[in-house]
Length: 131
Image (cartoon, rainbow, N blue to C red; front, side, top):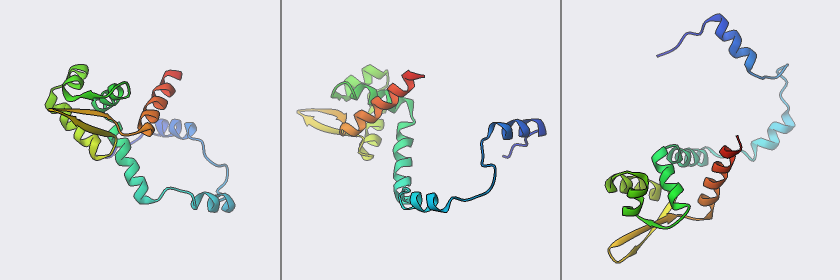
């Protein structure tokens, strides 16, 4: 379904968009950056990662796991979700290597996969607190 934009709205959109004054390509900069730009495969992996982080329920689970290692029962109580729903979300996070688990007797405990995940979560939270 496409939307039509009124001429007044289009003018407003264009005036809020910053662009180059001329269509001059800075070849030296383009060549320098082009060799360092993320590959398509890596971009797809990153999109999956950020897609997983785009769900409020999963972010609440990550928030809890940034504080402590927890079992499914504890996580379900913390985020007011069923154990089944929490398990489903944790499976998705585990498949993307965002969380890891360990078994202790009949319980399975989850934690964030590594310091990168903890740091990323905290950096985003701090960034949003600055606003």
